[in-house]
Length: 297
Length: 267
Image (cartoon, rainbow over all chains, first blue to last red; front, side, top):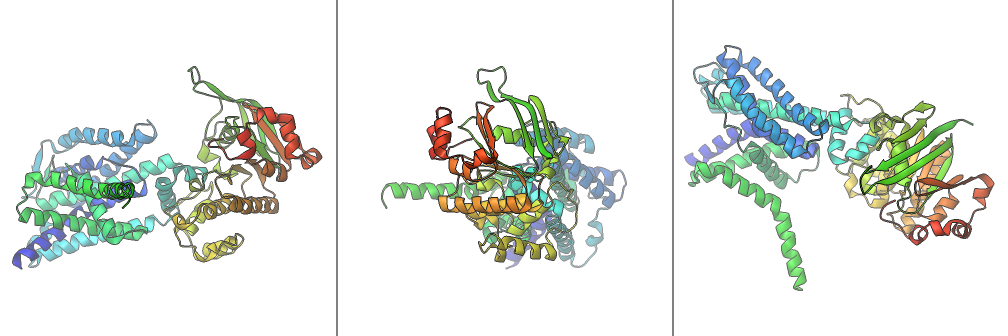
């Protein structure tokens, strides 16, 4: 029982910490239908920015605000490459992600910044008796506040136009919406969420590292797919809820896997396989049905 | 009478200076009176859709000018001239956002050409208004306001698109074979509804069609395009007394059989 509750606790904490990445990916992949790979870079960018600010002696909240702002800028950069320079969406994301690698090293000044001896947003929780619970509540508060704001936003006039941009760009353009600007802005929001997640995770784990974003897009996608499968999400509110739930379940699967002896080095491979299976399942199923059909079964 | 649309010496060449060079529109001049309902026919590749695309700003012309309601819009990007235009495409999927609800789609159309802020989307007042509006269709959609559009049939979606295109009473309504992919019965319903809405609101309308009967029976002016040029342009009494046989007799050699009989793949 002890172990099971330990697994649950770790998964919930991690799931909430990374839930904002999944929420960001919902905006890019699902709402805008834009496969944005900037995430791997903007996650580190958030962590690097907050780490540098803290080390320089600024208040961690100031670092978080900065992380959100430059995360937004990174997303906009990808959007601008795609809409203004007409660079393919996947390539635009990869380009900015690659550029961010250098930027992140510049921001930190080195490849790893420990934060253990500095005051972070989690420092006040250290002395509390129920440290785990208060950290989880803190994460839950941030995540659900942002989920709620996102839901509201996507029902405003502007938000409707953003959803329509991903659904039927031609149509909403003929209704007088500059879809280019919406795409740029939406990717900005998406990456601002991701950078915020990076900023919180860096403080939570006590360091920022140049490699902390590797595979973030795939992990986030896995979370979304798991959540959508479980909740059969149709409405916007359900979609964002599914992302949060999926993020938790994904971490649960990972934690159980590690407990069962999955080598941490194989984690990305396992996650990748999970996403391939989930994405490929409909095609495999259909293929099998067709083969059966051909055989007359 | 006032002119709602003026097109001057319009020219559009695709793939210029390559072996695929195609003169899609070859010096078209056209004046459309306010409140006129024009039907456009022509065989595949005659330039019908390109003409609408140039008026709507989807493509920009190589030469010539476009005026809508006295204002030059030749180089205005598509989204900036949207406030003047309502448009319906052949593919029913193109006119609506399928992951969004009926009321959300209508609301987006109501905001045509206006700036979209952070105020709340669909309100009670709109819901009530949309209910009344949808009753016109007689499809029972008035009770399904918060249903996703993906649940609707092609015909239902095209009817919804028609409402959306005309909701904010555009200066010009562009219809691009909007009944071509519907079954005959639904197509008839949509075309009748189109005629009714256009007449009731006195909308200036340009309708491309491959159905010769539609082209003759609806509208008060008919234009035939051939190889990017206006082949003939008749209105008034002459149009009223036109028959399919006569059009075929006069211009049959320039209209491929499929134009007269069945629906094409691409206009």
